[in-house]
Image 1 (cartoon, rainbow, N blue to C red):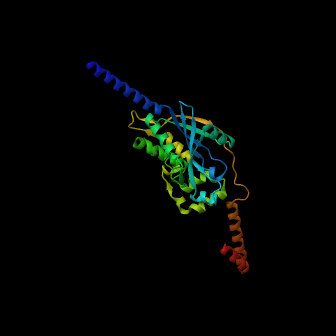
Image 2: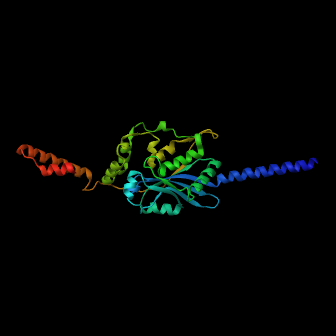
Image 3: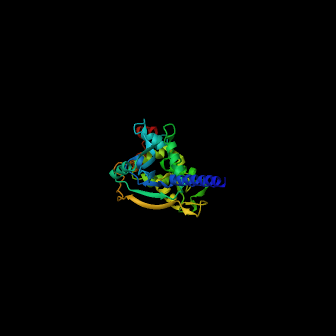
Amino acid sequence: MKLKKKLFFYLILGWLFLFVGNLQGVGQQYRVSLLTCDPGEEIYSSFGHSAIRVVNLETGRDQVYNYGTFDFRAPNFVLKFAGGRLDYFLSVSTFDRFLAEYNYFQRSMRELELDLNQQQKAALVEFLEINYLPQNRNYRYDFFYDNCGTRIRDVLENIVGDQLVWHDEEQEPIEKTFRQLIDEKVFYMPWSDLGIDLALGSRLDVDATPREEQFLPDYMEQAFSRAEIQGDGPTRPLVKNERVILDFAPKENSLGLLNPYLLFWIIAILFTATTFIGFKKKKLFIGFDLVFLES
């Protein structure tokens, strides 16, 4: 009887070790990283891009989860994009395909490998797969608060919880408005910059907090580099390794000959000169006044 009890005990113990080993293996088979891509030349790519790379170390499957996908054929695409009224969705592609696109357009790419534990990796992959289901993948894009970058941050916070500490206090203490942050990226695209200014209006002049600055991918990349995971064993940096995947020299950009800054200066000079001439000759240019005021 005692022998049967011992055999039963060892059998249960063996199954327990096997279960724990398989559970650990679920997390260990993945490598998860943040991809940050430099801006492109089109308005929709001028702010850069973020995506999640997941490598299955057992099967070799290498995928990129991309929250920055949209339909170019959407009516009034540019206006909806500038005004933050465009529908986006989560897409999945192979890393090779993702890499080929950015290599073709000569946009630099960097990778931050995340030091998540085994259960966190498994939970993150499961979350992404559920979010990729047709009924879940679509979302209403918001320029500042819900875009391809902030979605990744929010997913990570959902998985890691309060153990994820961003250390925003280490951010460079320079207050910037949303307008200043946008101008960093699209100043050389003056017509697009003007369109965004008109579409978003006064909300651009609000000072952005360090967290809100993360709507720009390079600011979020910096935030990931500062972050730590606490309360899960010894405190450790969120980022385990970092590497440059693509590295291209920055492209020289110019405002071009015809831009709104030059146009508005011409209008201002024309208006001032006409007003001065009218004052000197004591003459009213009614046609000019009507055109200017009507416009």
